[in-house]
Length: 195
Image (tube, rainbow, N blue to C red; front, side, top):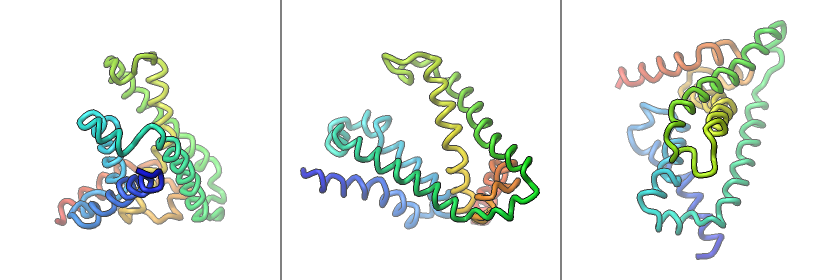
């Protein structure tokens, strides 16, 4: 298979399939698109698809294609940050400097602490750590991953569920960082009850 054909198939699987399943099924009523993207990313990754059907996984995601996908994912992250910044209105934070700094720090520190705790809980299983990894590096890796990804995912979730406007999320509004988990949870509950 040519690299271009493989890339198109990978793109359809990683970008199109989550959206299609979210859009067609009743899933849209219960979860935001970002949750569907994360779940399908895990299912299509080496943890599930790679273990259940390693030959097909190797065919669809050969090691030579991973750097290309990684590079594109980095570009996507930069574009996501850029788009979030476009919604930023500096007048929203005028006079709220201390609150803004506190919210910004806590939105990274708290998920990192919780991620470190989860990493510590599952670090007893050497399969998670790998042959060359150590318990400490695994715990720190999970903590860092949770710390840097929690706010963008949560922001996308809140915006998608119409809980907050993009401007409120981008401006670091207290609602967007102080009560986001409970707010997202309540919004999802309201959707489930109304169905």
